[in-house]
Length: 263
Image (cartoon, rainbow, N blue to C red; front, side, top):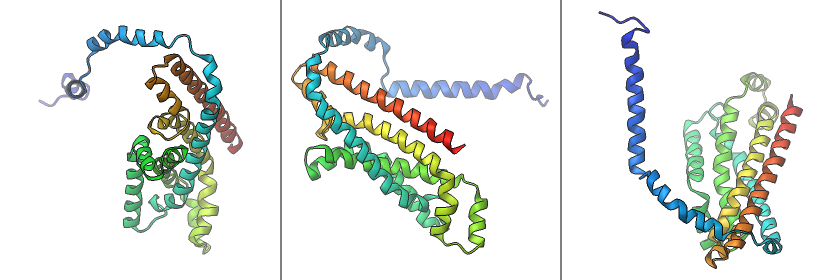
């Protein structure tokens, strides 16, 4: 007897899928040692730690002005270098522009490797190479960001309308002319939007990179924690939150303005 679609047997695949999802979640929870009872036991310690941070030491803000500016500078240059590294290479990672599959696959894997290494690991490598300071943070954000932006740039190129590309090629246009007049006008708006979002992300990451000696406000944050100056730590956290909120607001308004202008 063959079951009709939507009959009683039609629920079997859904039940099997649900059981599979539950099994995977249980397996992941077991491996990750997820324990809400342990979290409940640790809540008093978290409350005690937070109580030591209150009230924030507002006088410490004067010491954070220069590190906060340095953090923004790290994010700016990390984003700029990432764009400079990603743009020339992303065209080779777009299937519709690269006839050579070896070059396509190689470029794709380069992007996978660079974005697969965490910024903190990259910062530790560059700190060992060039010493302490903001420059290792810039290099770490640039390398990781190049992989992220390169992947997005290449995928956005693959989604463009091929009509203008074919028309330019039919008129004898070379690769550079095809890119300038056929590709960039279609992707530039999306590229700018994602670069702004990447800057916002880099600003958050730059605050963390300071913890491994890569400069910025994160250096002050980890220093205050090591000295058990938790009220100074609270001030650092509040300044970081304010910086991220301002960057998010400015980035959102700029993306909206760019998208409105592109219509």
